[in-house]
Amino acid sequence: MKKQSRAFARDIRDLVQRALAIVPAPEAIDWNTCRAAVWQADAWRAGFRAHADLDDIAFEDLLWIDDQKAAIDTNTRQFLAGLPANNVLLWGARGTGKSSLVHALLNRYAHAGLRLVEVGKGRLAALPEIARRVRDEPYRYILFCDDLSFESDDASYKELKSALEGSMFKAAPNVLIYATSNRRHLLPEYMSENRQATMVEGELHQSEAVEEKISLSDRFGLWLSFHPFRQQAYLEVVEHWVTRLAARHGCAVPFDEAARAEALRWALARGVRSGRTAQHFARHWVGSQGLDLP
Image: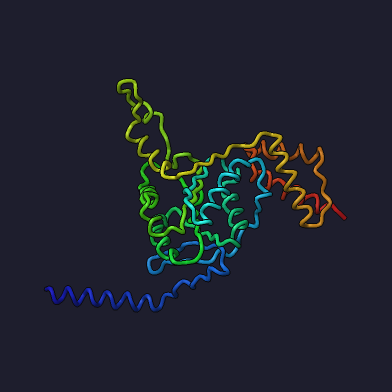
């Protein structure tokens, strides 16, 4: 029986090896020319895939988030200088510049050795493996987890929590995690959980469910919050993008009262004033006005 088991295991190994020989391996990444990559994995292979299309967003394009820009810029410069730096959680309203800010950092500091690896929610278990693969590279890596959120019955958040414990960063001091989320604590919060809080000799003790949720976001040393724009801020962002897009396409499109009124109606229809809404409107306005130009 033991001989049959060993023979079966040997046959399985041979079969897997033959299958791997057929499946093409991911192309090797040249980090000297590649600024960003996506971690991809399937049943057979795992590796980096070069990011084909990078956002050309600049720091100067991100308006009305000056405090957030200053904080993450300082943290990133510390990281690039080999000094202590924090993992960062960017949380808040949709479309307010969280992901764009991380892309703008890459554009600003790629020449200084900054690199980015995008890691999807379903690949969080691979964070230690990614850190292991890049630890000997002469670059500094942001492992970017975009638009993270977990449902209450989703245990995958524990993979991120484990990665943030510290052991991964001792093994790879050239790695940080930057994550974005619409939720401050990444997990849904319920009123019933707050009712389970207790008072002991005047001291508030959170329920175990709340403590578990807070413990995940607490492992990010730097929190940056993002909020919907006030009307005037929104209009300034719209004007910036209208001006930039018009110049890029050689159109003389003024940002006049008609454009302002239409921009406000555009935001009202979408229920949010944000940088993303402003950019979408600018594309619409510059494009439609450009069609009418001689």
